[in-house]
Image (cartoon, rainbow, N blue to C red; front, side, top):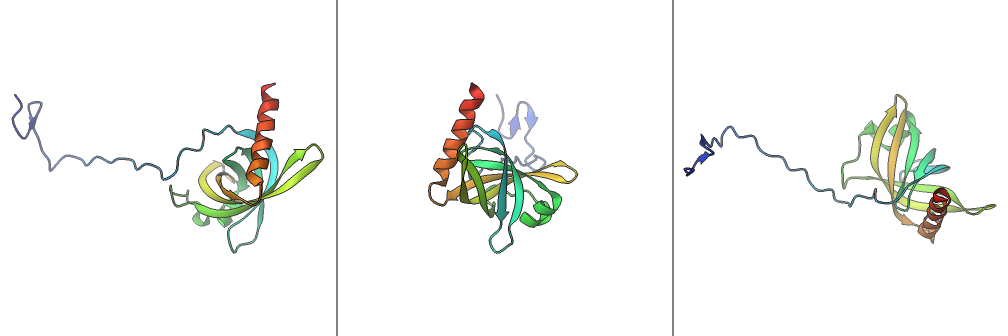
Length: 155
């Protein structure tokens, strides 16, 4: 029988026990369940009150996009190049075009959060950007475009 203050025959030493750290749950759900498609599109990003910067979209999903950019661009968008903490994302506006038909593209404007920062090379970074809100039917156009690319990829 285990006596009070003992665990498995050893005295329980509360003073020397290391506190357990529990990882906090993210304030947002995991958005990586959306299928991504590789794209080669330009995007113009700007933080509110700052000038616009042009970057490249590496991949796109219904919930966001992955941006490829340089150290200078990353520093402009995220001063100090510190990865955003969950729930403390960096607000950014994005403007980009997606083709609706072979000869016609539509300009989309979205309010977004920079939710992820990863260094991929000495002067190259990837920024994970989550869509928050689109002007007009922007989400529908992204949804249709991603669906079309996924369908073409599976053929």
